[in-house]
Structures are given as C-alpha cells and as structure tokens.
Image 1 (tube, rainbow, N blue to C red):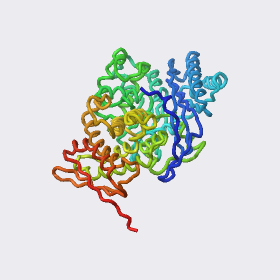
Image 2 (image 1 turned 45 degrees about the vertical axis):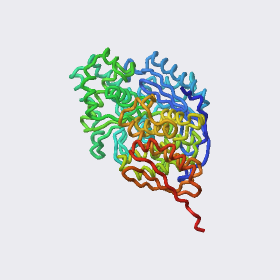
Image 3 (image 1 turned 60 degrees about the horizontal axis):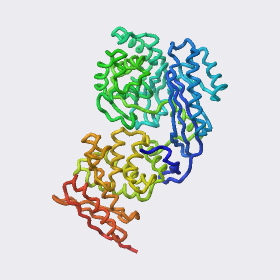
Length: 541
C-alpha cells in the first residue's frame, strides 16, 4: 500500500493557451462548512492559475438540531460544535493554513444564540465564522458542482439536501439561472412531521404537501429552464446514491462523483426502503449510521422531485459547499480569474492538474498519445470503438508514465494506483478504471484475470481495456527512443494483417523493435498479424 506521505509536492504548470509553464503553490487555505448535522473542513494548496489541490479534510458529526431547529442551540450542541471546531483547527494548524474560511448555515444562522456560538468560536478556537444567507449557500454549492461535474450547455437541477435547508440551483457548465434555499432539510422536516417508524403513507402525503408549498418557485423556474437531470450533493444525496450503488452493483469503490442512477433505479429502491423501520435501515449497505433516524424525509423529497418534475436520472457530486467556498475565494477575493477555454472542462483540467503534480514526461507522453489517437482513428470501426473510448485513451496516453514520479521500477503499476486515487473530477468510476488500467497495461504484462484490480471489473469494461491497451502499447513502442522519431502513420487492413505504415525522420529500427515486441494484445483483439513498414522522411532542402 502507498501512503500519501510518500507523494511529494511537485511543480505544476500554468496553462497559457496550450503552453504550460512551471510554478509552485502560492498559498494554503482551509474552508469549513458548518452544517446542521456535520462540520466539514478541507485544507487546500492554491496555485497561481486558479487551480487548487486538496491536502486533507476532516468531517465531524455534530447534530446541532438534535432537539429541533429554531429553538436555539442547546448547551450540549454548543459543546459538540466547539469540540469539532477545535479538532478541525488542529488540522488547519498542522498544515499551516494561512486563512480559515468558516461559513455557517441554517442551524447557526437561525438560532437565537447563534451569535454566542460564533463568539465562542472566536474566543476559544480562534476561528471567525461567517453566517451566510441561503442564497449565498446555493451559489457556493453551484460553483462546486460546476467545478467537479462534467456539465454541458443543457440545464440541470442541482440539489443539496442539508439538515436545515435544501439548496436548489438551475444552471449549466457556465451559468446559474436560478438559485434558492428552502427550509426543508432532513433534520428540520423530521422535527416538524415527526414520522413514525416506519413512516406511514399519511406522513408521506403530509411531507409531500409541505414540499409542494415550499417548491412553487422551483417548479416555476423549471418550466422556464426544463431539465431531466438532477445533480445531487452532500451527505443525504451521497448516502442515497451509495445505497442504490450497493443494491444495483454500481461501481463506487473509488468515488461516488459522477455516479449515475435512473428514475427506475430510484423507484425500485424507494418502494423497498420506505417500508423499513430503523433496525432494518441499519442493515442497508451505504447508509451512514448517524443518518438512520432522519434519512426518510430526504428519501421522500427526492422521490417527490423525480415524480413531480419528470426527472429521468440523478448524478452525484462529491464536491459541495466547502469546495464552493474555495472557488468563490479564488474567483472573487484573490485571483479573480475564472477557468476558461478547454480547461473549463473538469475532466481535462483534472487530468492536467495531476500531470503537473507528477512532473510528467511531457514530450514523450504527448507524442505517444498522438500516435495512439491516430491508430484509434484508423481502427475505430474495425474494433467497434466509440468516441468516448477515444477520450479515455487520450487521457490514459497522457498519464501512462506518471508512475515514474514514484519509481522507475514497476512504474506502470504505480500509474494504476496514482490514477485510481487521484480524485479525478468529471469522470464516472468506470471511466477512471478504464484510464487507470489502460495506463497500467502500456508495458510488461497484458491484462489477465489473475490481476486483482482488473478481475473485479465487469466483462464489458475488461474488453474495453484490452482494445485500448492494445493500441497504447504499440503507440508507446513507436516512441521507444523517446525522441519522437515517428512523424506519421497510416493503417492498412487486410484479411490477415494489420499493416502500420510509419514515416520517420531517422532510422526506425528501435521504434519498429519497440512496437513489435508489444504487438501481441493488438493482434489478439484485432485477430490480425501486426506488420510495420517504414519510410524515411528525407530532407527536401
């Protein structure tokens, strides 16, 4: 096993057009989300291009509304909150964070003694808390989702179900069209309805009636900006996703980010889960023990949203308010430089941030990727590949040698580990597995079921990995010298052969040798013998 302590901090690159230049972290800051049920702190390093890297985080369950919202914080709740902040402050200090941005939401904002808690935080912990309005909370959550989820121009409904409030944001990859915060969080609604165990049909109808009244503005906005997709963030939405993932055997070992389930998946889950009592819910895989008592009001809310607004699918964002705090700081308080161009896409940005941190072999990796993509384009139809495969092959090509950051020996295996644990944004877990395994199999052994990480994948994913790995292996062999000798290639397919015609600037012997010794997997997936023929590019001057 690797330990994060073994991964040293490397230089990163500022993106200026397509030409990166080296730089180093310029600041460390911490962000704390003081929610109704939990306090969650995150420490990040900031770079001068406006990107950031998470160093550590800490989550403490505090349940400030254990005895009801709006009645003030009880002495016990105060103590739980202060003790949680002290633990987070120790973490911040250990990383020498220069600023601590602490934002309080419903429970503290609405409590008549919330000011007392804020003052105690200043006096006893040394953290100044900002109690933000719901509209700002919604904006910050929107920033986090835009940053961490692959969005298009089509609007989506972003939903963050907290303990005291629920934030609704309608937006796309660039803009927000609607922002609101409603007081219908899971703890608040559990306190108002006081559902039985299990919850009754009458109580469900009472909840839905309450939701209908509170969500009139959301309903009106969705008529103007219709969508079939919910992006869910924070604990309740993640817990629901984790339960559905376990039920449907969806991949979620690496991350819940970008995990997607359908309206049908949710309906099947809902019909079974809503009938359970607390003891039965305690045995459901994916559900946090501390949410057993109030998860049902959130489950009913999601069901209401999907039914009333004709939602077809839900995707999960693991980024929420705390990351939004960081992004707002970067956009408005410090740099004022939004991400733009191709690096506005969280997928590409996330991959290139990882490459910079691992001090990648840029010239070789880019050239191998270019050769791999040319092979892909020539073989796409023959190997029944899709455009999505091309994008994942591109990222695997860029990342295939990042294992050198740890060691030359077994660098292909190190690449697998780094990619799987890099918290890449915008990708589904299955896509991360494809990228990681294609990078892993660029050299040495071909994919085999005795390989633990490969064996656990579904058959269709393993098949995808074999095809893309076969292409990348040959492309890597064609730059065996690391001097970009192969300038162009074309593929000729016959009944029995795949003839790769290459053009080189110098003697091609090493490149041909490198590609031929790695041709086996491509031959296997294409059912043809690989033959390489070369032409030397002569100097016309």
